[in-house]
Image: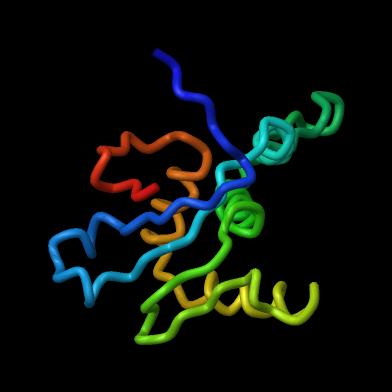
Length: 132
């Protein structure tokens, strides 16, 4: 049976590297499933091409795709370097954007890619990896 996705509800995710740690040492990411239009926009913007007349090139913008995916679905984090950042608690759009960018900038590339894969549905998640 297909389980519908509630795109207004966040879920908790613990990265694979942290899953073996005691719960109190794990970093927990708060993610929001992407709406179909958001995912389509992200996928559409992933590639850029130029016409054959001018050389016919195709660029795949995977790094930009990862960052934009995180900007769309990352709602906060608990215990990242011992600190909690919940974006819903930010005072305004600017504060929220800066807090979100600070989280993203502090993550190693492998973790950013893992989180983006979870958000886009490209990760095979076990029930223990997603905490609803």
